[in-house]
Image 1 (cartoon, rainbow, N blue to C red):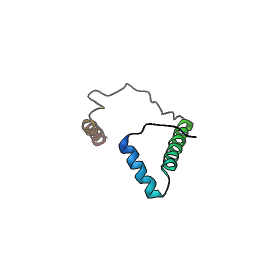
Image 2 (image 1 turned 90 degrees about the horizontal axis):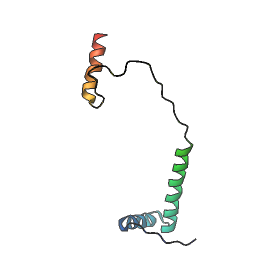
Image 3 (image 1 turned 180 degrees about the vertical axis):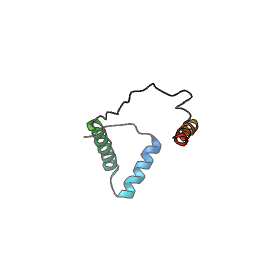
Image 4 (image 1 turned 60 degrees about the horizontal axis):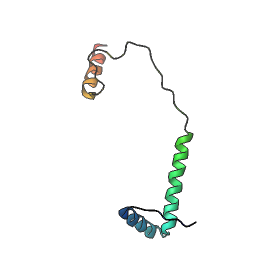
Amino acid sequence: MRTTIRIDENLLKRTKQLAVKRGKTLTAVIEDSLRETLARQEENNQRESVKLPVFAGQGLQPGVNLDDSAALLDLMEEADDSA
């Protein structure tokens, strides 16, 4: 089937170079890329969702800032040292 699409100039240039390198036509390279992208999308849609365990508790301890990984590591090391 023949169709017209607009492709970024740099992307088209790189795709043509890949076609030459692989000894394929530009159409074949584009079709392969689309098939791979669609297959990956289907694979992602078929994945089972994962349920993460949830533990009861009082939430974060005072002074814990999840956005500060260095401080969090310090607090965990302090807890290990006191155990």
